[in-house]
Image (cartoon, rainbow, N blue to C red):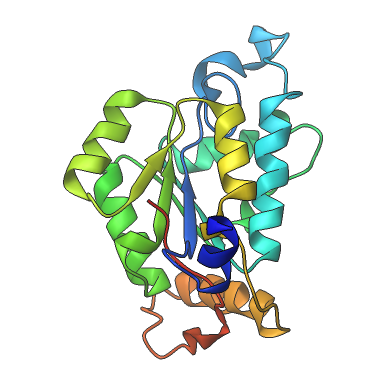
Length: 202
């Protein structure tokens, strides 16, 4: 009953989910465990596939997804297809990609600016408790999860805050608009955000 109320009233709606990479989107660290000489590589069955599936469900609901990782962008891009197997997910599926050496708090702030949303509308996923604590301390309105990937998938798929009440043709176009704006490095302040029928999470 409470879930139905929060969904229909769009209480604390999530508008964006930001993902770390290593041990969050896949098992292990891309620079250590996926080198050609390091085979066999970590398995992708189980929770990694479940998280990838959840990402596509979030996108279908009009929720923006982004990457925030302290890695080398070119290295990740070149090795992406080796790590994401089967080819269920691509970098192009993410509306914003922040793979650099900046503090994650700064990257999340930049993502909020690009998406024209408040930190309270963001969920951040990271397996590292130190990183989670740092983000929670610097950005207390951001909802931070990721300690248990199986529980994380359930939260993303079933929380009232990640459901959408009204789906329209514009739902998918919002993501495209944001991606295009991000590529042009312009702040999407003039976008029509009414295409989001959703909301924030605690």
